[in-house]
Length: 339
Ligand code: FA5
Image 1 (cartoon, rainbow, N blue to C red):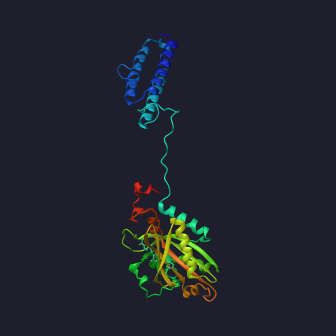
Image 2 (image 1 turned 135 degrees about the horizontal axis):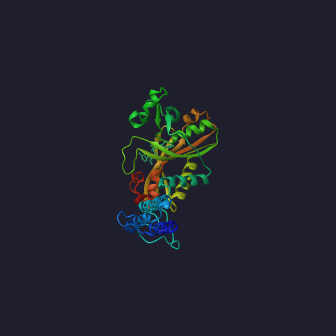
Image 3 (image 1 turned 135 degrees about the vertical axis):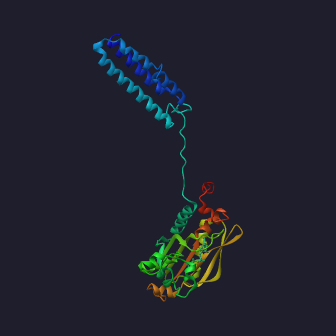
């Protein structure tokens, strides 16, 4: 055989093999193509190798070199096709061929957690009532979590068993620090930083060593509200909470105050809301205690204020008829995707 026709035969064979590998629709077809072209006994490449013996002596080195190049190229084409098969890609994967005229597969979109949605909505509602959002740290000192809130050293609320004190802070000699047990800490931080009038809300996580049950979780969220100005009264507190509840729940909502006690408000109340014929306790509230105003350098003869703190999980659970707030933390998508 002449060198020219040997080389032409090899080129044609290479092109044919590459085409066959690319067209193989599944692993079985690819294997059949491999045997046809690269098979050790009767593969087409093996047959072509026999032609080497028929070219002229002087042409042998060139023919041999070409044969090796073609063999490598065919092997590389097979390896590439095999890799595509492994990744389930394109032609070699089983299943129908790609049809660009079909509608695409819709990607699964996540959404915000129901509590995050609630927090955003509460910020919107209170924003419309003129309250801006303030933030405070989740790791607090005793001044902001207790002292300035009129909770003295011996008060049971400061018991280490009722709080998450941080052992590291003690070791560093930084003074006792704890995970804040209420967002009322932010009242103090805001009043320390600005003069009255104050009209803020603060939403965030708080921590208590409570046993988890249908209405308790050791980490939960509160919405704190604080308004300090001249001539603020309990009537302002009640109408603000009613407007808030009406906007969030919609429809007929009633607010009920029950006498209560918080060291940082006087008088203090528990806030209940009635919606769809059921009363539920939402949080605490009251008129800012003069001692708190004094602790931040405000004059209680000049200004007065109201404050409230509500549980976000409870508010959200009530509106969506969730009977156990632990659901919010189980991260079961079947629950979460309903919001
Ligand atoms: C307070 O935390 C006060 N700081 C509220 C306050 C603010 C009073 C401003 C006066 C002025 P209390 O401990 O009652 O109060 O908690 C408020 C609300 O948080 C509760 O009514 C409840 O809705 C929610 N809550 C309390 N503990 C948990 C818990 N473990 N899990 C979920 N929600 C809780």
